[in-house]
Length: 138
Image: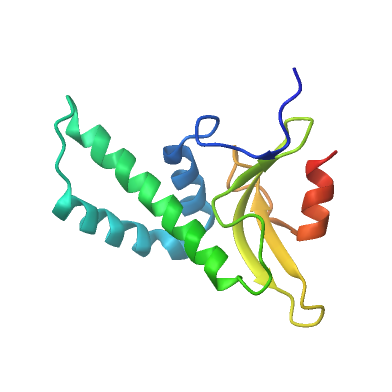
């Protein structure tokens, strides 16, 4: 069965893996992650068998969701379909992990910067939103 093109859910690529790849490819987000982790630890209470696992999951998920929401809000004039930390895949099952969004000063087009989710140290690539949508349908 061919993979479903579009946004990849967190069951396919979990929050821990997304966090590791994002922090590896965007070192500027590391302080934000640890600030969030410290804040979460102050209010975290769990009745789980392993509360550390619950704490880690809540921290990873909160971090990814916060980064995504902030990136979409920063670009709301362009109404992006995807945000930072989203993973998209095409019909062939090839995935792209979005690590940044920006608007080109000359063309005023929205661009995505992405890496291979299995290798954050792979070369960073960029494309417009239109190109990304076209790639997803391939």
